[in-house]
Length: 337
Image 1 (cartoon, rainbow, N blue to C red):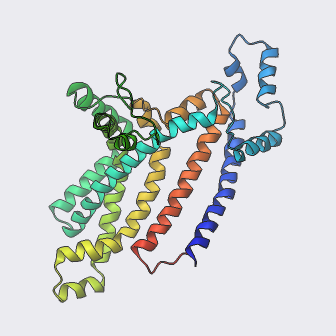
Image 2 (image 1 turned 120 degrees about the vertical axis):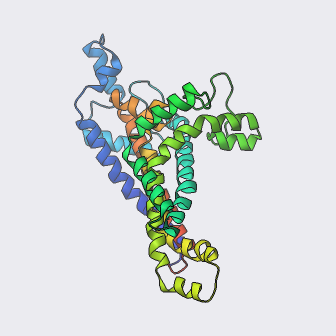
Image 3 (image 1 turned 30 degrees about the vertical axis):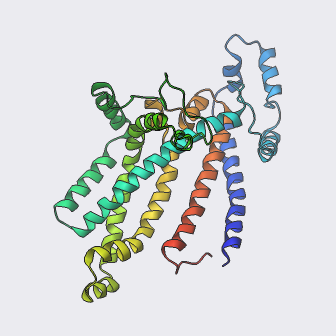
């Protein structure tokens, strides 16, 4: 199938997916017990003030009309206004999304850089000491709650040893790099600002490391299993029989074939880490979508919750498309269908 046609079809299919997601989120948000207007207006608000709030935000209209009005705004790029803070939701999303995206990219980078070699070594030394160590470490990372590890790292590395900051995205006494993408590391590189780059890396390292632990464990295990399965195939035996160096077989042939399963796990973990970063963002006071979602949920602020859900849906769909493209790069036999 033509690659351009395949991409157009996949992008087009994102639309009904996002519509279904928006319907589900809209329905759940409206069914949650509570009075968002009362929270936004304050405890001293009179019934007249509350009714004015409802009219201003269209909450006095039937639910289908509210949903259609909201979706019309979405297609115009208008995510509405926060009921609680009265800020434009789209501007908030532009401000908070880069922080979560940068944290997730760094976490999945750490998990991949550490997890893939660990899985390869574990498969090469199957049922020997390196394999046992790798499996024990993977089990450790999966078993312990992320918030507990976050507090341990924050206390030991940040407070006791003073090696890294204990919170926030950037130093409160320094100005962040000039905003181009909203990603501080990338913006520091673009501006060639080594001081800002160093500060950005110091602030993001521990939150990203802790966030990466669950993905690191799954990537290691899947890489190990895929490598072991590939090592037992006939073409590997043939390559070893004709005298190709074992290290070359591992790096050039076996890993490339085994990496397809690992790539799937990496893409899935990227979405899970982005959506599940809320605990890490809360503990480290990281100004991302997770922290924004918690604050919006506590105040029953519908508009930000809807906007965050749609953003996550777009990211998940985009990651799936990119992953499908990479399948064809790793294995030309895979066709786009």
